[in-house]
Length: 111
Image (tube, one colour):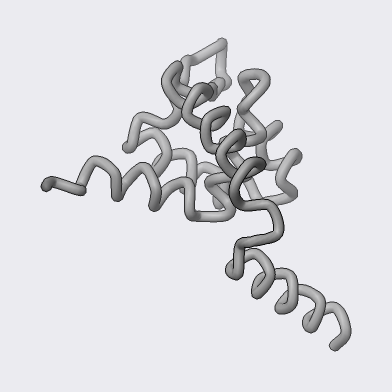
């Protein structure tokens, strides 16, 4: 079984920054500046992640004047909705990774 097509998809969604970018674009198209503001990150870093998302066809872009506007590819929204539905039904409170991450964040805050 060839798993390569799945690996890029899940690798991109598994990256927290890229997932935050995808969530930022979930309801409307945005420029790099708007995305960077939404996720509180430098524009250069956001641009790097946008390039990776575009390589996997998770997002698309168009030029409006001097700006490049990014949006989700049409197949991504239904995939996100399906993942959210599945998570809410089966993963609430059961994700050890999530609990481990929360503990790490709490420990960093205490320091």
